[in-house]
Image 1 (tube, rainbow, N blue to C red):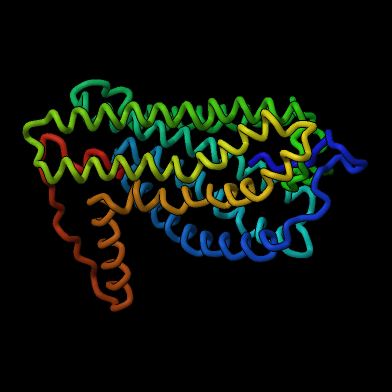
Image 2 (image 1 turned 60 degrees about the vertical axis):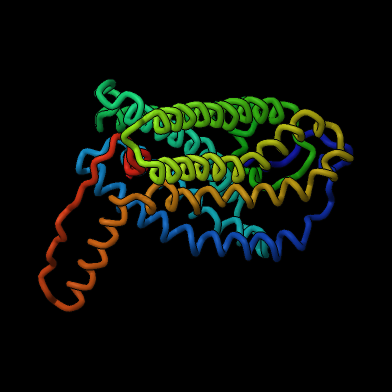
Length: 336
């Protein structure tokens, strides 16, 4: 989230907008973020538990899902700070800047792992007998480490380029004071193209290839094909609806807002609404990437039975596992 103090502006304070939008800050943000936190935190915790169990059993794509859950949980855990910052008194400068750093990185880290999941599902469906090395738990762990290191390192480099790194604790990087400085605008454009548009195009390409393979399969029932098509559509639309408005507005702001207070005023409300919309992705990820799969449903049932058994002080009996064989099935698309 590119929400930081401005260095270039038209008045003595270096900002365009003198007062915050009280309706958004004191009503909209607290209500929306509270709902997202109440729903998203337990959902991501349960998704993390399921993905962790499956990863321990050798499911390589569950490794990516574990990391996606960690990224989403970091995002969700930052919401109480944003709620407090919307009210009075504001949080401290260091906590404010640290929360911005966590939330902003969560956007792009999540996008990276969503791409990894789409690539893995592409290999699993289109080339099930090949690329065994790329579809191993070891490779998934190595790729996950690379993604975290690269994303965090890039963000630190961006902060240094924007002259924000050394003032990390002194300035409130989470405060939005338009207009956007020119250096920040350049970074925004880079991240819009590489952190949003490129992952979107990659996911679209791999999911369309999966869909083509599914419809070419004579052994897959028509009902199963329709389910797969709906799932892939939901995955793409969730990512697009959550991030496209924010990234589009940031792209436009980065082009026209520097030294332009009139444009900054016009984009103020759309920008604030788009920021809140990005949280939707962290809430829906567990639903579409985990809870809809048969493996996840089985693990949830086992967890429920285990809890009931402990409450009744009775031994827990595992239900027999079942497997369904299809040329291409919905379970092959689900990460879990």
